[in-house]
Image 1 (cartoon, one colour):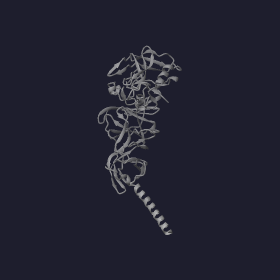
Image 2 (spheres, one colour):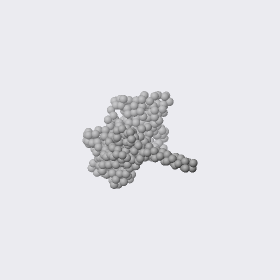
Image 3 (tube, one colour):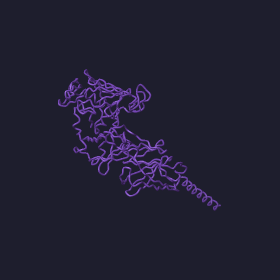
Image 4 (cartoon, rainbow, N blue to C red):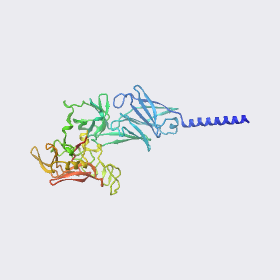
Length: 473
């Protein structure tokens, strides 16, 4: 009897062990990866210690491969869980998508997509990728060779000798669009986040400067280019006429400098604004203006390319963010309950701010409250005045600080643009705020003035109005 009990226990133990073995077999065996990466990046620079490549296998959700360069070779690890041989059983087309970022990123998976952020924000600089690349599985080993390339239309601009952190500088060019690799789907498709032309780019440090990248608006076409690099203290400008830029290349720019033939010109930020005391710090000129009396450029609200840069028509059909009945951005819920207004944005983001695009640093478009503060905290009532620029009568208003009579700004009455027509130039001034109308998103709050009085009112976003930046510390 005792022997029978012992045999039963042994049998039960063997069955239990068999189940453990069976479960382990069902869970799978960790894979090994034999992945070759070409020696140089698509940026024509060497891979450096700590560089990472993220590899996503078609139809394999949640899990992915991380390749990391240790200075001489590539090591690998799994993300989203350990990659097992059972993960690859039953996969159809064996292709992968690989992505490299120039900065450390966080990877998150949701709804069939892997998304990427750095510091909670997209990486609007270059990324390298290879999509639809074949791989093979030999037992528990994955074999592949990667040749990483830049996205179509993207160029890299290398600026030598940037002092301090590259993160303290932004790069702007009206003929380049910032690009981010937003996500990779389980089908292997890459989704980009592309900003407007002219929106400012962040930079990435290298051994002797910084790299800025964006997609060309006019690849392989001769154009006049104006490049700006801005910090909190200075704005550097490099103008190149009749240049042809080719996608896929990296262009080396000289070190930031105040002098030198063909080099950067520089403006000190403190020379660009007037401290109006309680009313804040206001730029001396409109965006796009060559002087305080110059009208400057005209912008639709939330667009970074104005009339002087090629926007010829100001209508809903040409507006960047949809129409009055179907807005695609800055569509705060309306108390009227109109359909199509779906996001909660009520204030202009830097990426869509014409003032920030032009000057960078701490310049931006003023809020409705800041226009009100300027109106209410200056020494004199705003009076219609006449300014003279080389004998030409320029009408507008002069606003003087309460605390210092020597501090004033002049706001020319530049009129506005509707459709293809300039209206009321010399008679009325329209100046955008960054504040959406709280009740009706197609409208934005604006400062309007003529010979009678200034007023805060609203205006359709599609119109072309003036932009006067504020400097905000």
